[in-house]
Amino acid sequence: MIILLFAVMLIVIFAVVMIVTRPTARERTVEKRLTEVASGAGTPSGHPEDLLKTTRDREIPLFDELFRRLSVTRNLNDLITQAQSQWTVSRLLGAMLVIFAAVFFLASWWLPFLLLRLALAALLALTPYAMLHLQRKRRFSRFEALLPDAMDLMTRGLRAGHSVSSAIQMVGEEIDAPVGPEFRQCFEQQNFGLPFREAIEALARRVPIPDLQFLLTAVLVQKESGGNLAEVLDKAGAVIRERIKLKGELAIYTAQGKLTGWILGLLPFVMFFLLTLINPRYTAILLEDPWGKKLVWTGLAMMAVGFYTIRKIVDIKV
Image (cartoon, rainbow, N blue to C red; front, side):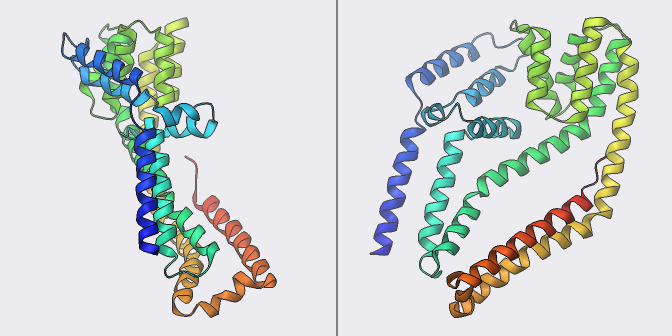
């Protein structure tokens, strides 16, 4: 009976996700027109697929339309864009819902406590969200590593007599991903008629890292009031390289502290889980007795404070 109920729930959830993520008539029309554009002359840089990808990522399916005014939904959409993922907000939420339901029903076979089942299901349901965060972090790290090369290329272009827009185009064509595609998109947006300042601000929103913010601020100041941008970029590139080197050294020195924090933070939960599997009566008092519940909440609060303190100690800003 439980297996049948679980199968029915999965089918219903899958059907709901498929319905709410189905492209609308407007989306199909836009996709058709973009395909026609891509099959024609293409974009100025010869990469028509970028136009398709950018527009597709920004299209919000029906489920997203229902929550588009919520700040949480907007933040999820920004996270997906910054991670350069093929997901949409609706698919992300649908996947989290399916994982939550699946884990909750599976855990009902061997976890007798409702609170534990809910906690485990909620924790595993955040897996897609955590993967997007990890993907974004790796992409930004790669971006920071390549940014000094991009600044050097812009410096050489400016000293050779090129304009700022031409220097941005050079970076888009010569530097590897993820720096190259972002700068190429910025240049193409200008070619399509977007004002220079808005194209730069859009790039800053897509990649909100401090080093790039500094570069784009210098570009905007030079564009509006003048100045020796080549010299500024030359010195900034050297500073960024030193920062990257220092961050690498700090990562080595703080690795043990971070590992200690993770072990101390996860060990109580692992032991509680194992004791529950071995004999639920050992841990039942913590979830059923009023004093046991108070001890659990007190312990969780103290662990949160300790975990936060360790992270603050090892999280050194460069």
